[in-house]
Image (cartoon, rainbow, N blue to C red; front, side, top):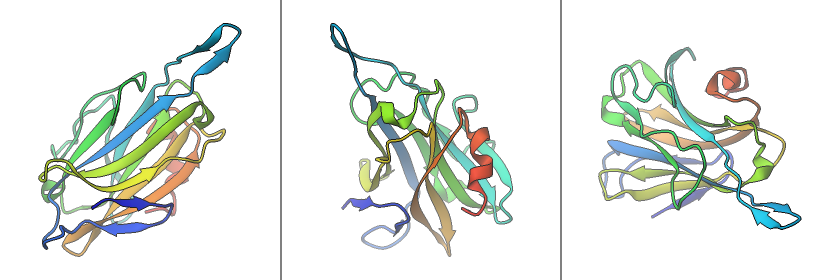
Length: 192
């Protein structure tokens, strides 16, 4: 059962039959708006980049997973690779998280998306992030449509927070500006 999230909404990551999820995948999908010209419309390539940032309880960045570092230092988080165009159906970039093996010092994982090529979100359509249960044939748990088209070039999408012995997902949808996750760190203040 999928929960369509709105900005600020939270969803527990407990399995329907009890227990907590152990392996999840955050998928990011998008399409470039076709440019209209004198001779019709043409496709453009937009390079969005998904990143996962791992923070400890004091809000200190411990590790980052992005197109230049596809695996966390401990191996619990894996980026499946960089898509530079958004072409194709479904998720264009994915980040897999083995929640059972995320180090105990990590209290929050934040997922971000940046337009590396600098196009604004007004040039992007059908953008979404979604969380899937990798142990149940990629069953979709939650989906957040990245609707807020505008002049921003990045978005702080969602976060996973430790909640007792399990995890909770919160849709953030915070517009920001920047080509990589480094540019978003000031905007993350107060969100952890």
